Amino acid sequence: MRALGKRTTLLMASLALVGGLVAQERAPERPTLSPRDQQEVEFGKKVVAEIEKHYKFITDAELVERVNRIGQVLVEIARQTLTEARYGESGPAPFEYSFRIVDEKDVNAFSVPGGFIFVNKGLLEFVSSDDELAAVLAHEIAHAAHRHVMKIIRDDAKVQQSVLLPALLVGVFGRLPTEDFAGLVTGAQLYRIARVSSFSQEAEIDADLTALEYLRRSPYNPAGLLVFMERLAAEERKRPQIDWGIFRTHPITCERVETIKHALQKYGIPIRRREVSPALAVHARMEDKDQPDGLYTVQFEQIRIFTPAPHAELGSSRARAEQIAQLLNTLLDDGVQLFEVQLSADGRAVLVKGQEVVRVTDADAQLAGKSAEKLAAATREAIRRLLWSDAVRLSF
Image (cartoon, rainbow, N blue to C red; front, side, top):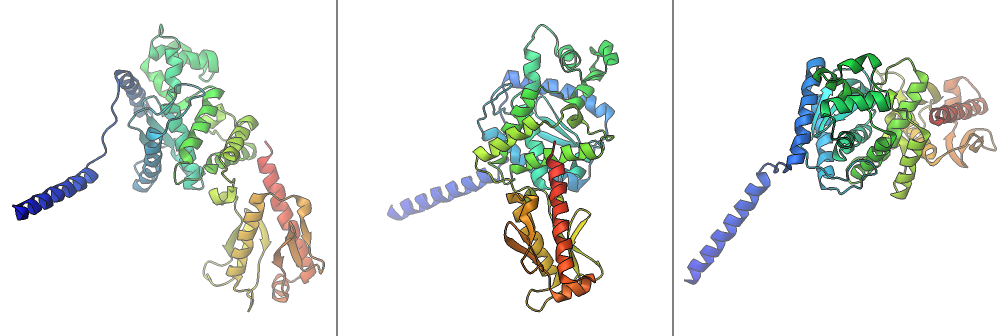
């Protein structure tokens, strides 16, 4: 009996283990939707059907995988995170979120009620890191999770959904051309509503702050949201003739950026812009692609800062350039003023905030065809131009 008891115990333990493994392999349970949730999803499907009539979608496996991978990480967090709505309804919402890529060049993303999220190919080309893309997706998930569109609709239950939403967009937000007003009752107008995706400023701020709640619980840096909007604002100023899609209808305001900054400070999240966005970073650029062990230049965009020569003690050109670039990125993220970029007492080194960043060797001077002192002075001026460029980018 004892032996049988042990076998029975072992069998039960084995079954429990197998059952646990099966449970782990089982697909995640689909979220339970209330009748109200289902109604919202059905409305969203109608909008999606109209979008599909007017737009082409990207099926490139790599792009689709990237968006879905990042999006689903955030979806799982959104479903499990209680968030307070400053506009709309507090989350989470039990939707099955989906992500699709629209074959459009505009820097645009939008969400449709029920958890249907669309990202333009142009946005994927604009973001410079997964952190920035995650920020955009988190923002759109927040719009759906807090039911921003449905709040507008339910504010006046007397008017049908297919009429009220576009009417509000025209009459209140002024986002659709007036000639479209006569055709608002037709289903064909729904795709335009989704594309414009106009929310009030309160909804946008709510989506920003809710996105930060998701991001700070994720593998992605929440500062990506701030950096993305700062970069977008800078591009708008440089190339105002470009149609930036949804972000044209929602200007990046100082108030909104400052709100995100204060939230990041509140959470104790350091704003390391150059860690989040390689587009903002100083890089060590290879001078000749056919000679990977050759010369490297420390460079920011079109500003060539310094080309170090190989040195027996200081290292190869690449090692020196990478060290200088890394140091500059750290100092720049900490904040540097123009007057803090100075020459050393001997005139052969550049100091930033009292820290030596570049020491010009005789080989460096010979490579540049200048005296060490003149090369150091030119390097100092290049760093100052970098600072000026950065200041202009952030002055909106």
